[in-house]
Length: 144
Image (cartoon, rainbow, N blue to C red; front, side, top):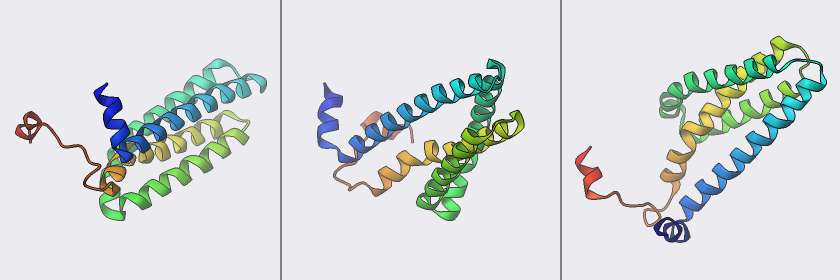
C-alpha cells in the first residue's frame, strides 16, 4: 500500500514503472516472435539459445562501460545512442537469415540494451524535480 501511495505522488516513479513495463513487454514479444521466426527458417532451438546468450553476455559486459560513457558524453546522449543501436541491431537481426549475422546482431542489441538498462533510472532521477525524489531513510545515510 505504501508503494501505491508513493506511486500516486511521484511522477518520476510512475515514468520508471511504465517504461519498465513497456520495455519488458516489448522484449518478451520480440523474443517470442523471433524464436518462431527462427523455427520458420528451419533453424533449431540451439541458434535461439546462442543468440539469447550472446545478447545477455554483451549486455552484462557493456553495462560496465555505461557509467563511464555517461560521465564522458552525458546520460542523455548515451541513452539515445543505446536506443538507436538496440533498435537498428534488432531490425537487422529480424532481417538476418544466417546464423553469424543473427548472433552478431544479438551482440549489438545487448550493447544497446545495456545503455538503456544502466542509465534510464539515474537519468530520470536526475531530471526529476527535487519534490518528486524520494528521501532516503536514516539507516541508508549511515551506509554512505
